[in-house]
Amino acid sequence: MPYLSVIIPAYNSEATLERCVRSVLDQTFVDLELIIVDDGSTDSTPSLLSQFSEEDGRVRVFTQANSGVSAARNLGLSQAQGSYVAFLDADDWIDLQTYEKLTSAMKESGASSAACGYWLVWPDGKQDFGAAPMDSGVYGGDEVLRRLVLPLLNDRLSSRAFNGFSVRYLYSLAAIRRRALRFSGAYLEDELFLVEFFSDSTTLCVVNEGLYYYYQNPDSATRRYMASCVDTFLASLKKKQELVERFRLDPGPDWVRNCAWAGLLIAVGNEFAPGTPASTLKEHKRDLKALCAIPEFRDALDHYVPRDMNRRKTIVAFLLRLHLLTPLVLLYKLKNRHWGEKERS
View 1 (cartoon, rainbow, N blue to C red):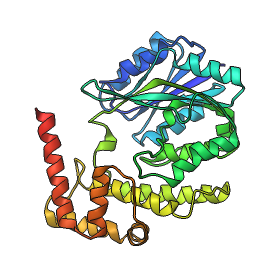
View 2 (view 1 turned 90 degrees about the horizontal axis):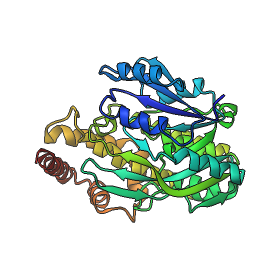
View 3 (view 1 turned 120 degrees about the vertical axis):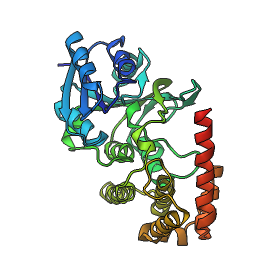
View 4 (view 1 turned 90 degrees about the vertical axis):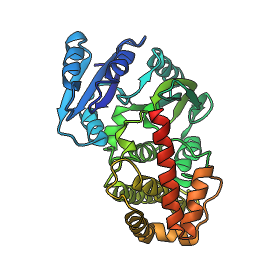
């Protein structure tokens, strides 16, 4: 059996899949299997996957009807044979020493999981470093709760908000199966998975190097309008509340409202994403009013003032709190036109 199972969900990934897969197969750490789940692709992704599986016996390919990244990862988990599991997105790639460094650190420390830093990579080649969850070292359960789990619950707004990327960790597959952990939802699935996994007495070794390359793909599905955006957020918030109760966590008195504000800002941005059914000022104002009337969002608007956000979020929150929806619509229209002109140039 392989020591490590690497799971990649792939949907219409022909443009980036070669780079992603090569970064795994060319690892200095070779005791791994690569599970790629084709999520109902309609481009040349299936033929590429056939080539990879014929070329390298460590590649195992599975296919499902288009069901989203969470379902694809769950299928990969059900088929994994390794002692540990890692996730990788088809847009991204990893340093060729990533798994050697993480597995070595984990074995030497006796920790049950591992984490690394990452690079945000933009289409123009710009790269921004994202630090690991903590400094390099080994952390016990209480420290992991304080420095990883609670920030994923109590601060989703500030410029220092903890990043919930699940792809920069190694996980014990036995622990995942023992707890019956699964991904759920079209977005925010990473945060839920991390909170549930690390709330149950896990030791973590950290290698604070940028070993994962997270490509900021302008064509990503998460950058387009999602009809299920609000439902997905509300389901995520409910699950977080259940986890807080189950593990007796203490994220602070206003953590639900902080999360609700984050969800509202995401939903407002989604209202103006490419593919939105609304087009006129009247339609956008109607939809924004409906968003603000949702009980969880209404409560946050009435009883919590978000602080320490970046400039864009601060302006949007200010307009929402004062019910200034016409300027808010015009602001997003101007922003989207500006970015459209930048892309065309």
